[in-house]
Structures are given as C-alpha cells and as structure tokens.
Image (tube, rainbow, N blue to C red; front, top):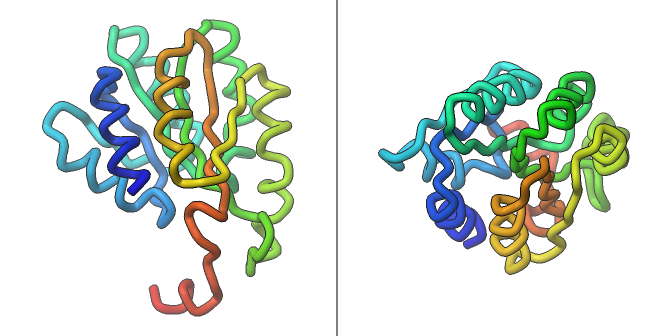
Length: 168
C-alpha cells in the first residue's frame, strides 16, 4: 500500500514532524505517523498552520512534512511565500479531489487550480497517477532542497461517493 511505503520514506528521510488536516485519503498514513514513536503527528485546524509548523520545525533543525487535501491548498496560497523566501524544503503530500468522477462540485475549482497555485508560489509540483509512483515521488521530494508538492491523483485514492459522506 502506498501509505505504508510513504511512511517508510518519511522515516528514512528523518522526518520528525508531520502536520495534517484530517483527510480520508491520508487516513492510513496519518495512523502510521501517530503510531511512530520517532514522529510527532500534529492535527491542524487549517492547512496554512502547517506552513508555520514546518517553518518552526525547520528553524529548530527538524525535518517535516505536510499532509493535505487539494481543497485545502487555497488556504495556503498567501503563506506559501514563506517557503520560497526562506528556502524551506518542505514536502507537501496532497490527496487530490475535483478530478474525473468527483461527486462534490465544490471540490472541482480547487482541484483544478491546485497545481497552478503551488507553481505560482514557487513550489515544485510532481504528480502520482498510480499507487506505485507515490513513494518514489515522495522520496525524491524529501531529498530536494526546495518546497515540493506531491499530488496524488484521485485515481489512486479512489473516488468518494455521496454515500461515503453520509455514513460519517
């Protein structure tokens, strides 16, 4: 499973702080990070808090990663300038919404604008269209000296349905 592989890459890269906004697409990875005694998984109330968390970790000498859904990318646009200005090499792992088969029309605009939003703010973007691509792309991003977003296609995480949402 790609979440297990990504967790192994986070460990191998020495990631100690993982910020996240709860997301079903990241559920397994979030559970693994919480269970890992070498990591501190921190739930955020909004995605832009993750940029501040990552900046603080980086200033303190700790490597971090940020997990979010594409709908949260819009919340980070203004504060992403901090990553570019301070040259913070944050890896952002994004589960995509708003792609083909999306049931929730409110997810579509940010899903379509995610890549451009990151690129406009100086964040490098790579895309995983298959499960076997996720961990290698995350591993490369974790070695990069610049902020990099790994976008995980909705084909990889699965299409949510209205029924999935009503069972919560």
